[in-house]
Image 1: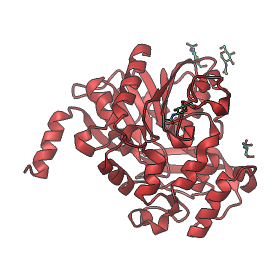
Image 2: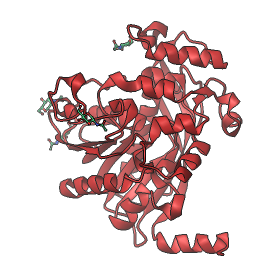
Image 3: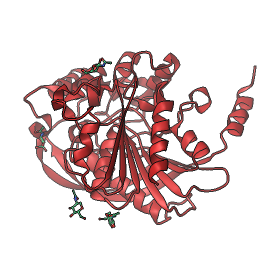
Image 4: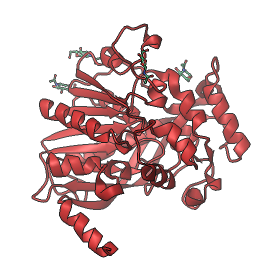
Length: 375
Ligand SMILES: *[C@@H]1O[C@H](CO)[C@@H](O)[C@H](O)[C@H]1NC(C)=O
Ligand SMILES: *[C@@H]1O[C@H](CO)[C@@H](O)[C@H](O)[C@H]1NC(C)=O
Ligand SMILES: *[C@@H]1O[C@H](CO)[C@@H](O)[C@H](O)[C@H]1NC(C)=O
Ligand SMILES: *[C@@H]1O[C@H](CO)[C@@H](O)[C@H](O)[C@H]1NC(C)=O
């Protein structure tokens, strides 16, 4: 039997990458929506919110929208920077996680980091990586769950972090990079989509994982999760203000993130136990800017699991909703990128939590093949 110290030493010996945690102060402002919605704090209010969220013929965002307001603030961002043992990579990947996770989504520890995207990127392909806890989540600053922690403010954080990294002004990242790649998952992909549209010349490539531009499939995710008020989830109650909502059970988490026969039950229980909550403000602003034609002029890959529930309804190959105009629901994003070099991949058998399934290796192979062919 190995002691945990011996196991740790072994893990460190295998994973040659050097990583350290960062705490980064930022000052940002954004044009936020003002919603006339009291933060949902009881189970009944949370259920009502999600029933309204999915109701056909009813636009919940519009229903609660009172106007817009500039939100300005100083916040703290928690992040982890990794680089190869021998020194920084030429290219920095900026990794933005989705709802229900924090930055550990990219460097999952299960089975000695067998599922880790960061391990592949740094140890096998020589990149440096910067993974951050989105503003409002994990060890980054929290805020008002309705009118503050929204997509536009989190996007302002991503923009400032990207700018600081490019100018070499993040304390603890002593490197200048030739190239940048923005990678997102789910809500993090929706943010990355807006980022590359607003800053079309910034990144050389972008990878949007667990994403599509078909907004018709969110109901399964929204209702299937069985969201609860954060104050009723014992692991999170002490760390988040009332009004956040989370998925407390393996049933909800499996429906949202895992495809049948594609996951280790140990991964499901670990990921559920470490899940992070979301804000109503994020959910109400999730799709903003997602239907705009994108100005990005680098290379973009959209890669999504075949069985993804929120973005494909559980089958990306069923083209009924797009009248068969494209080979699958991911390829259907091509016309949104008139100035970019566009690629798309549907990962066989994979669910929405792309990095957490047995199929993650196949997803990573596609991503690194794309990056190596384009950078
Ligand atoms: C819902 O309302 C918001 C706010 O008015 C608007 O931006 C959005 O386009 C609407 N969505 C749909 C699908 O009509
Ligand atoms: C991409 O767009 C940026 C910003 O508009 C511009 O500076 C850059 O030259 C463009 N690159 C190419 C390859 O067109
Ligand atoms: C694509 O590039 C052309 C030429 O630079 C530019 O005029 C056009 O606005 C760009 N398209 C988008 C959607 O930004
Ligand atoms: C997905 O839809 C396609 C086209 O309708 C169908 O051929 C295929 O069997 C479906 N896949 C699954 C996993 O149900």
